[in-house]
Image (tube, rainbow, N blue to C red):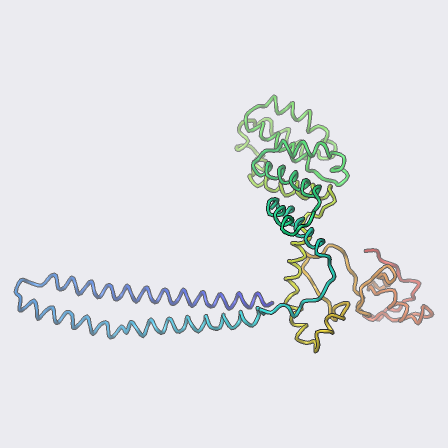
Length: 386
């Protein structure tokens, strides 16, 4: 966990900086106090010049001695030295973990330039950077899907309206895609009607809210009975929902959450992933880059890296990057496939089909599970579908 080590080292620098700053401020305040006391004592002297001169000399001598005892320069140098030491360790730690030359982990991948340009442009469109995407394609002399650009333009228009608490565009879209949303078990249309219904109640229009419920909420009553009951009961609190038991309908984040849900459902219905493929790829690459750099230090020649078809060890990514279930046989250390599917043993452990065949000597006899004393026949193993 290189990042955790960097954070710990950085936190030490921050603590040293705060300590040095605190000591410096205390020292300056103390010096300022001594000087102000000396100035005050000089101002209180009498008008007798000779007596005042002798007294002033004594005050200044005492001030000088006091400042010598404080040794301000040495104290400041000591604080700065501790700070520089901590900062130096931080720099060394950073240099250790952050390798400037990441080309060691580079592997040639055949890809047509126009394909890469299209991927980048589509990513820019997905991030609502339409002007930048157009400029990029113009400079790269490439073409991208106009339909995809129009698709995300439509999505972001509705998305932006929802974030400004305008539900009409999203409602119109959801009603047009009513059947498709129901097939995906989505409650998006109901939630949009709910927000519109609550807006009417906030204005105190009870009759209009009741009519809206009969027209748009009633069709959802059989599936979402509990939600509809709450909404109908909230009509009694028209104009004063903030004093009702249904203040959950007034939470400001409801609009933000619904905007995010709309974006996910929109992408789902249009056959697009809810997260940008290019952004996800770059994030996953950054996650495994330190591991790849360590691997390159182990390999004796770069040609070994280019000839490798798979990693010599399991490469675990966070759940954010896991979209499909993958089975790795604990015996053969190979990924499962249609030809070599995972097999469930009677004891509950799972091996690949090839493992069960090898352990049972081509299915001719019973074999012992590698992880428990239980014995089984290959015919007793059941295929798992993941």
